[in-house]
Image (cartoon, rainbow, N blue to C red; front, side):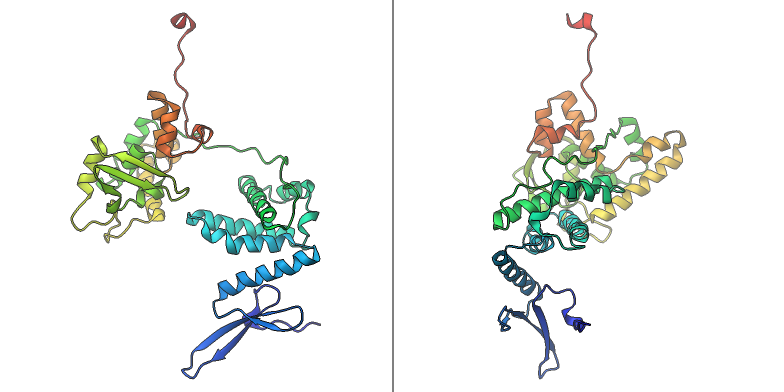
Length: 346
């Protein structure tokens, strides 16, 4: 039976070792070494994350020479090199979770990259059928990882996920009618009412509303860099938006919307506050509880897109939301323009 790895070596890539040394001061320092093919050790310093990344690269180079590259190793390199560069925290977390599931499936037993076929992708989807929307996202990430493998020179084959039918996607269809929104406003304090209205006026994601800093407001313009995509949008500060900003900005203010301690409002806390006022509205108007209960803070973005589409154009809605394609904006437009009877047209 093989000797078990020491505790400090658990979870490290193949051929990477950790040795702990106690300095004269009593401080414990970890040193990382990579065991080469000839048995010699290469020092990789004391930074664990840099050592893991370098070890992954060395393992890949060794595998490339042997012409056998495992998917789990490619996924590990993607996790170490690409995921940390993604701007949105939620995207990074989603990627890490997806990689975990992909490695669990394609790593038991470990399968060489070039042995993966479309049938395996279909099997993966069936394996994850209990969470169809998430499974679709995971297969999408598989395709992205595969394309990275092509760029890194590990394969020249097209992604086996191409052409594989995913689960049908059901997009959110909620449109918040004005009379429903009015009921929610009744139970919102002044700050929450301003947040909800600002989200509607700008058509931005809740996280981008939380991220509005005083430095983003100058020369009569509000500058927003969307956290999810990095897209930059600018808004003229006029009308109702100007009234809200003038009211919220105080000499000691650094963020447009703050928590009760005057610090930046957290996205999760915003969700909690919105849920609380929504539940109050549901109790006060039981006959509308079903409609009110479906409303989420993010629906203000779709309401903005829909209202702009109905009164202006889809192109204007696309610009407002900061989308790169009209197709994406269509998912946020929850109503079509009214049609006229034939005799009114002809």
